[in-house]
Image (tube, rainbow, N blue to C red):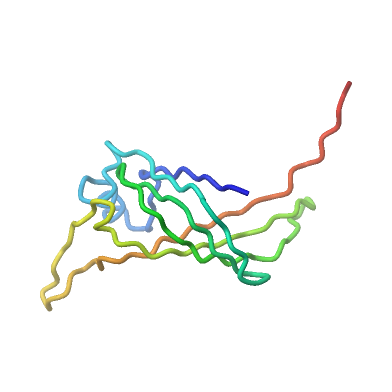
Length: 136
């Protein structure tokens, strides 16, 4: 099974408008020139009933690197209409310099405000497709 995801870089939302606008700027995602980041899986490994590892290619600012997400698999639940859904939460750590994002803001005490290694968190919810009937 393969997974492909397209994430609009303009959709970044940290609940702080000034920070979101800065993340969309040329200092970070450069949303005007690179409107999308993508992930395409290349391999999956089941670790346990509720954990898997998902390897794939992550592209940010036209730079592609292989990353590995550790994915927590949530148990399926039915919503109010009886539709079964399952959630997945994946976390990967990447070196943002590898994607051409070297911006930093030194703090008065010495360290930088942003670490070179950053975590990416993907949250996915899927639902079972409705059964189809052939009308012919």
